Image 1 (cartoon, one colour):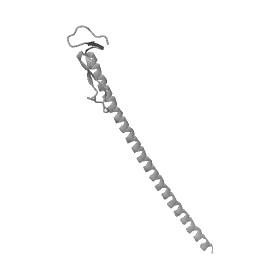
Image 2 (cartoon, one colour):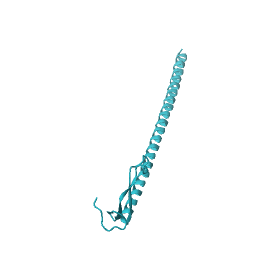
Image 3 (cartoon, one colour):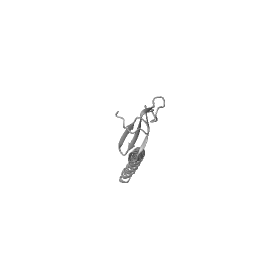
Image 4 (cartoon, helix red, strand yellow):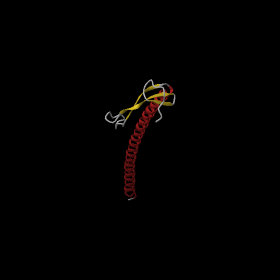
Length: 126
């Protein structure tokens, strides 16, 4: 009888180990799935952040380009009629609302001088 009483105990131990291995395997598969989900979410977030950084680089470049253009304009002499008017939604001047100002302007360094017309020697006080 001792021989028969030990056998079921051995079989139950093997069954317990088998159940524990299957359970562990299931837990590892769940853990793997969660890690993969987190990896995808992190990569997506990093791609979004990189897109934002790229857009900011472009904006900074455009602002710097405009700043350099303004500095170049101020450092040289320019003259002409000034066109005034509204701005279009997309940053273009709206031709229906813009008009030429009646003063002729000369820009020297950072000084804007306005005259009543080209060739006039006396500046206009506005």
